Length: 538
Image 1 (cartoon, one colour):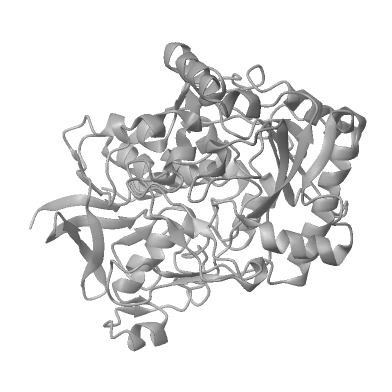
Image 2 (spheres, rainbow, N blue to C red):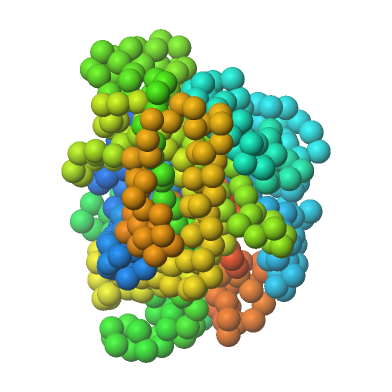
């Protein structure tokens, strides 16, 4: 059995960073096991190409939740990256760190070293921000962040003006001194190509002789010697293989696959493991529990001015933007679908925003079945103002169905399962309508298409957002960090409670969700986690 110093399970936002930082000295050997395949695909590298990867089983796990009463009984589609770079290779690339208070809350819950001031140096060190260096932004790091202020669709300016007319400040940098307000999103791209964690971190690491990356390698079980993790069993090309870790096994498989692998390996809720006949290595009720996610909805309008619909729908328009992208790496295909956005509070008493906004200069009321909506814009000029909650109080869980690693786990999201979540979303959708009613937007709106002017009562608005909402793909906390082994899975150094030689370093360790998109914080977790590991190597 071959031995490496470190085995990293998963090459996603955190795992790619770990591979780069742990191998940098040249004295530690690293094996990365990735269940998916290569990221060298045109629609992965092209930013707006994520419309093509949204359902593609070649690069996407395509998870489904259980029918959710909070979403009108709907089964929600949960895309997760199944390729080098993980979900950073198929996401919408919006680069948001989260609010200062988010991380200070992590620290104050008993996790020293995880406050905002502790983490800001890591965020700055890993970034190469096109907007330039300042107190908050970093330059010269491995991951390029693009300033899109001069590239967004002209309608975005009207959205920004309407947001200000509705009482929000203009914010030029959501990763700066304050998060509240409306502005243009920074995105993780460089020269018109996606800047995934694989491109920024893993690809450079793969050039080193002490790094080995195995694709098509599905980890099926953590191997133990007593309470110490000593290796991984995995399936590749129909064969079962094993590999040994001389120092540590590190799970970076994400908020779905990390708890799944723990449970398959005998670490998890006792009753579940006993029911499935899995030998118990270490019982912990928190594995797969405490699932948090952001849930969002779009309000869609028919406009009086051209939107991206007019260029992205006809064949000749697709040809034009395609040629522009291939020749100049610019235009709509080089951007995210979210040109603008922002953060606001539904209650002025809140210490920080609890809602996130998204502005999209196209609409997709009539999507084709089985196709990501952005691939088929509507035949009229439309646009959407979307929003999602930032710190919902609803909690779900992810639990395996069987001892078979090929069976997808059972995802119970429990969206809108608390009165507080329903009440804040009701206030939030009313605020979206307020933005749309401001002069800068109202004068170019022909009509509200979804949900439509007939939906006015609180009861109807609630029914509508339950029926039309869905995940915005930010699941966290299923292996959460905390000092108390009875309430958490890993300690503040990301070591699994009650076991040795095993860490979890990915978004599943978030004690609570953050205010905004989770990819930047996931990359930071990989960076911070690698520093913790390296501090302990002799």
